[in-house]
Amino acid sequence: MFGGTRVIADLLRNLFEYAALDSLSFRAAMAAFTAFALAIVLGAPVIRWLRNHRVGENTDKTDAPELAQLAREAGKDKTPTMGGSFLIGSLMTSVVFWCDLGNVQVVLALILLAGLGAVGFVDDYLKLTVAGSSGLSARAKLVGQTIAVLFVVGGFAWYAHASGRFSLLDVYPPFLKDFRLPLGDTLLGTAAFVAFGWLVIAGTSNATNITDGMDGLLAGCVILSGSALAIFCYVTGRSDWSFYLEVPYIPEAAEMAVVGAALVGSCLGFLWYNSHPAEVFMGDSGSLPIGGLLAWMAVVAKQELVLPLLGFVFFAELGSSALQTFWYRRSGGKRIFTMAPIHHGLQTKGGIFRPGKRPWPETKIVTRAYIVAAVCAMASLALLKVR
Image 1 (tube, rainbow, N blue to C red):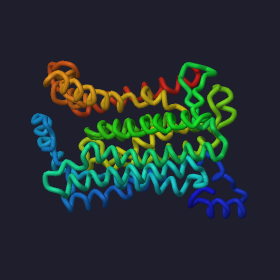
Image 2 (image 1 turned 30 degrees about the vertical axis):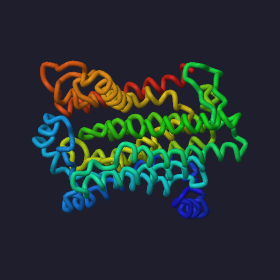
Image 3 (image 1 turned 60 degrees about the vertical axis):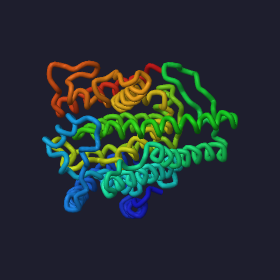
């Protein structure tokens, strides 16, 4: 059953013997187009509503005065946020319409999107409606993410055991042709898989959340990483391709390629409004769930250990923030980077580890991030053959 397309598919098949809707590639293309079109159509009225209700980013909530000053000079203090609401709405609608809702991985993807989207929405809502609020505390946000992620990963582990398909919980390191970690064979291994899945999904969700700091930066990088992950899912779900490339064959993973296509389409539609100068910001309501979905696609396609390369931009941003915070506390106020995350160091200081001759324009930072994301996506796909 393909969501809302089932009635249309049956009608076309019976009247004209037309079976295009049975084609995975056709549905992937239509999912991308539908998500893109919905994002374009919904974007304008949502942005207008957000602007009329003054749902804007508070640029003063930063410990870097020069960054706040740059934001005010660029008019970002007047730009509405929470644009992730129409991005996620477009994405989920397209998935429901074009995907097989009998596929467990797809259903869990929708639950993950809804759960992380709810956490992000509450965080954004508190920031924008409660005077002086910085949103959810780091601990409260992590608790919300953990509940959503453990529900999905735990449900997946239960499904693997209930169906007797313990190999769904295996982990496959890159470069090693015939090696796997059979975590699903024991209860202890299953618990390790759940903990590992939580780390991968929650970590990626936070990484994309931190990356969302410049016009078009996150959406553009997700388009590139999401496209590569959709290919991974497609290859893993095809018996011929998986046999040729000697990767695990997981039939249900192919349907996640349609989800990946919808993600790419929705981000393209969002980028229409978020490109420089941005008409709307994504906010946590969008950045948290799309990161979680990227990680879930990696889990389904057994590419968890390739994800750091595939999403290098996201993890470089997360790593810089984590290292900066750790070293600042341990060293009594010293810093490793000029500013974290690193895109702000380039924007304000012109360098990552030490100030440069002049700050980088925002458009140059974003464009070069796209280049890095594209190169890393291609390198990760090359690992299919290297294996």
